[in-house]
Amino acid sequence: MGKFRCDCGEMISTSNGIPNPAEWLLVADATVPDSAWDGTVLWPEIYEKATRAYKCPSCARLFVYWDGLDATWTQYDPAHPQGGLGSATTTE
Image (cartoon, rainbow, N blue to C red; front, side, top):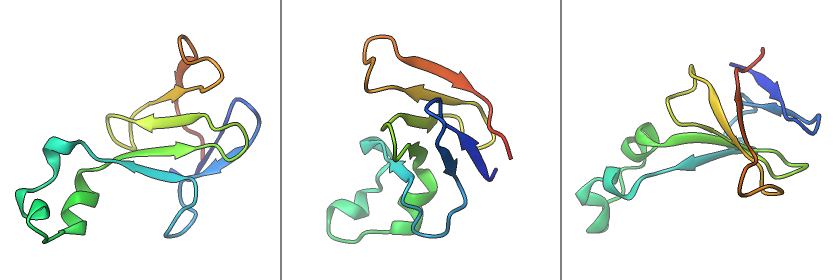
């Protein structure tokens, strides 16, 4: 993937090393293995099931890849919580 430009003009890198300060992981409660609740956290298993999201450091828009990193993202704009959605494809 590489990087993409936020609507505010900021470039967001999806391959900025680990940890990537722009990358957030969303984990559905139902996908957390039972073993995690008894004290054994299997981070690789949880990481694999996580949905990737990227937060713009300038304007705080959130770009969520609900269907994987090869799919189109959905944008959430905190300045317009009731209608600030949009989607687009990534650029290299």
